[in-house]
Amino acid sequence: MSWQKKAVPKWLNEGFSSYVSGQYMNIKKQRIYIDQNFCEKLGTPKGWNEHSNYNAYQISALFVQFLIGNHSMDKLKQLISSLDKNYYYPNFQKIFQKIFNKDIEDAEKEFIEQINR
Image (cartoon, rainbow, N blue to C red):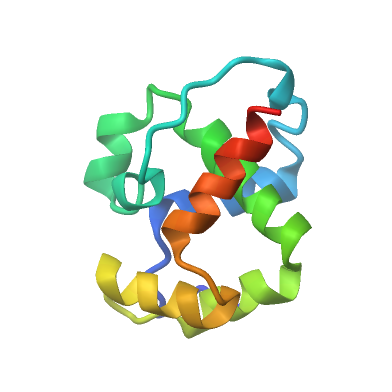
């Protein structure tokens, strides 16, 4: 996957790294608080730093796992390869919508519902 020259949101970068390394695979057994619109809040280094003490690594890893499990690794690769070289959340939303055929906010809601089961 080509990460170079792409502005990968911090949650996706950290979540993918955690997913690949196998960290947080058993996190569902613990209770975690997931903030609404977490992808937007965890997308930039500043946002990540403000929220990293609130399960940001676990949430990111679980959301990447959710995206891969419910869609595919190929879709995630397509998302990353389609990203711009400058991160701007509204553009990221459009790219996500195009690839996953749903709003990222809807994907977040589905993820939270699945986690709460």
